Length: 71
Image (cartoon, rainbow, N blue to C red):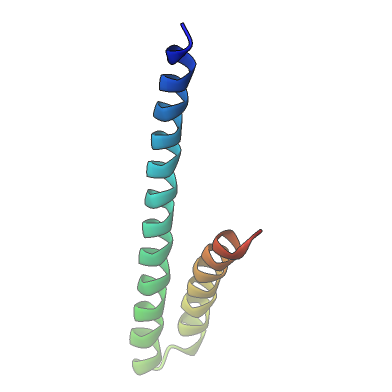
């Protein structure tokens, strides 16, 4: 009888760890994609597009840093 809640907790913990991993990888991909798009826009002379892409990258990396460094 006492093993059932423990098993449920283990399953929930694995699911939450998986979700955290997916969110982290998604944030990194978004940040790197924003940096790459900003570089391409900067090279082609589209300054406003480069700025918008840099804002997206900053939001992605800032959100990850906030989540990782929060106590």
